[in-house]
Image (cartoon, rainbow, N blue to C red; front, top):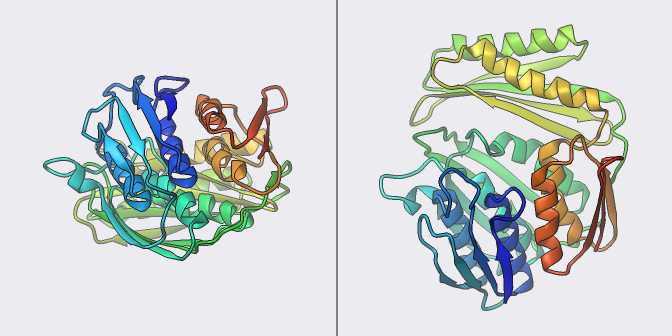
Length: 345
């Protein structure tokens, strides 16, 4: 059994998710202690518990410690992941429901299902656009798009928006199995082709997406970046707002977002997302800080070596590298000076 200390490095949910994915792919039993030890509320929250149960379902794993707040988990797969039709609902993990993000559940099961034999259809319910986690728009526009370059075939469709605190969102995921992942080289991003965005709201007046879109387009224009931000007013079970920007470069793409909250003007929400994009654009790097650690797992499972240059070496990145090396699948080298990540499977 592989023993993993969940308090290592950034000590958050990343250790858990990567460990679950790798256990489902390799069939290796794992024991994780000190789960999310460095978080304000340590242990398994609703979305983590859903990810645990989702990973267990696809590889028929035995579980010990799968409860809200649990800081220790044993996960013993009966084999590797199996393709199929699945539904996973974060709201069921906690009495009274939860807006826990479905996107981290998606990231936990995506690679195991892509490497399994046969195609899968997955329905995910819960939060889709939640602060402090990748929004669905990022998963769709950036994460899945870059993984497609490596040979992964998956489509994700947003059926309903889910914001904090109500949740109620739904994502439909289709994954083609039998994938052979090829290595990825992203050292230069090339010139910026376009910036496209969404200024989206549910159950809020139409002037809010208008103001967010106008502010975002004006700020990016002032920085000499051509941008088109679409205004979207959707139905939902509760109010929510956000700005989601995707920067398309010649060889890569990056994503940035800001979620609205009570007392924060629409213009300020747009400004937060734009500042994040402009800071990244300054770096000249092809891979944004979030994608940097999200690419480690697929590149570790590829048939050949990968190398990419990142905007920032985060604690998420170094922690994820440590987890992956625990399974003996790849040698990961991180050059802090050159901001270069090399993965030799």
